[in-house]
Image 1 (tube, rainbow, N blue to C red):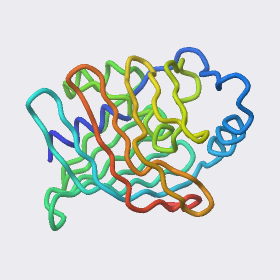
Image 2: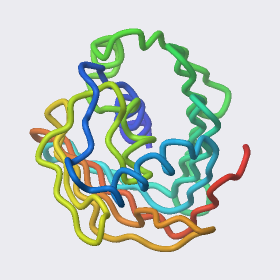
Image 3: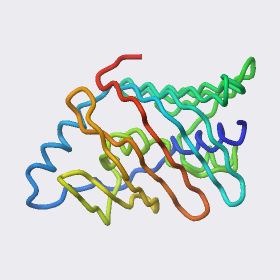
Length: 197
């Protein structure tokens, strides 16, 4: 679970470059993008599987998002090795039992140097909604039924494998994120759009 915690920590850290333009001439996609971009509060429950080379871990996931604040709770079977992660601004807190670790994530390299993992945690809340991270160039966008199916952003390949209807929103239920030997799979079984932590 320690491996999973640090791998997930680095998922929350990303970098910003130029804005990601929506595909030209697709008014329904632009409307969808605008609507999802305003969804600032949500909760998702499911599973997370992480792999880096030969190392792999999985955990149950509860993710609460409120504006720019991400709160993740990870646990193994029967709540074993529960970990809580809180990311807000440039501050990242990781709590495992009585142990509390605080990181300054002002640069993507800060978490990588301290944990050894490189994952885009700042981009992930947007990808969870099925949209590109604002302020970062997105390429290789592909669509089906006005829903994003793939994108590349900051060297990461993101695949949106399935969507479901939740509270009037069509949201991803399965997504894959990968770059090099690092990959993450998220399986969301319950979405609560508009939920406040």
